[in-house]
Length: 67
Figure 1: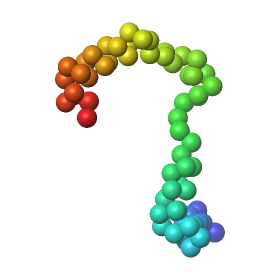
Figure 2 (figure 1 turned 180 degrees about the vertical axis):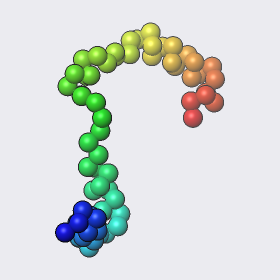
Figure 3 (figure 1 turned 90 degrees about the horizontal axis):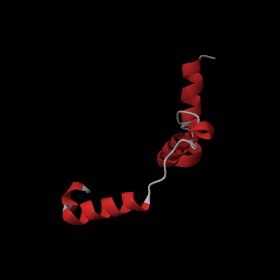
């Protein structure tokens, strides 16, 4: 069986059991993402209190920038 045939049969099985919306929700969950979370989580920089204060000050001065 060709890969395209397997894919079509799989979509049909998902639609029959979950419906179209359920199939789409299921397929969205299969996204594996990118990068290496284990290594990159240590590199992320948490916002400081100053960062939050600057953000809220900017937001209150010009709320149209943050829609």
